[in-house]
Length: 146
Image (cartoon, rainbow, N blue to C red; front, side, top):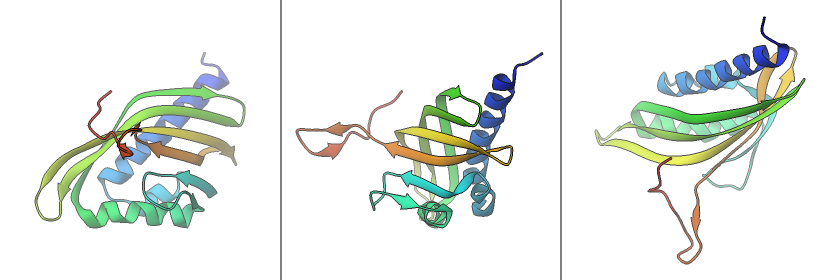
């Protein structure tokens, strides 16, 4: 019989799968259900932080504007799960076909998720997406692969 921690980890993994599905199907309202209302997101796009679910969703909107079709992949998701908080890290890649017809495989980024169990549902309370920085040039290293 699985432990509570194992059950919670499986539930969190399903939530992450819903991120992938929500992006692929362009379901902004489905994505809304995955975030805490007070989520704080440190994403690759300015500003330094996006606070609240509306700001997080607004950050996803350009994906649906720029891409005709969206692909999203998460690799090597590792989770640490407690009673009511959990965190994880993975690599993610957003790609697809742009509205002008150009296909792109995208770039790999690093992503960290922090979850809170709210009303028995695991929601993303914080996420951070980043690319490694080449210190000499001051530019992101966007050509790396896991």
